[in-house]
Structures are given as structure tokens and as C-alpha cells.
Amino acid sequence: MKIDKVRDLSADQLDDELVKLKKEQFNLRFQQATGQIENTARIREVRRTIARIKTVSKTKAAE
Image (cartoon, rainbow, N blue to C red):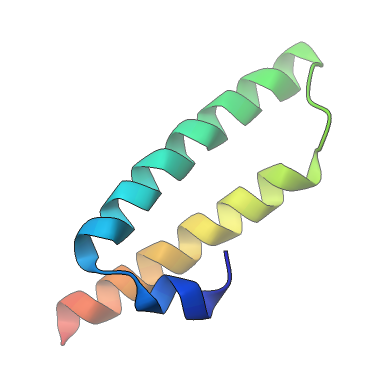
């Protein structure tokens, strides 16, 4: 998810998206551990999107 889309989300939507991505990250780690993962680049994408959401969430909370 690009930063522009993340900035357009409300605080509740950011929280929902964060929970969804955390679950996906958990599942991807299990797939990697068992050797079943097909798209290893997805782990990096999810991790970075989580960081983007957390950053935008903190800046909105500070305002």
C-alpha cells in the first residue's frame, strides 16, 4: 500500500488495516518456516506497510 493511500485512511481504518497486516505477517512467517512460501518479497512489503501505517498513525495522534 502506498503512503498516499495510507494517509487518506481514518484512524479506525488504520487500526483495522494494521491488524489485518499483522495476521498476514504471522502467516507468512509460518509459511517461510515450513518452506511453503511462494512470494518471499511479500514479507518485505508487509513489514514496510506496517511501518508506514504506524508512522501515519503516530503523526495523526500527535496532531
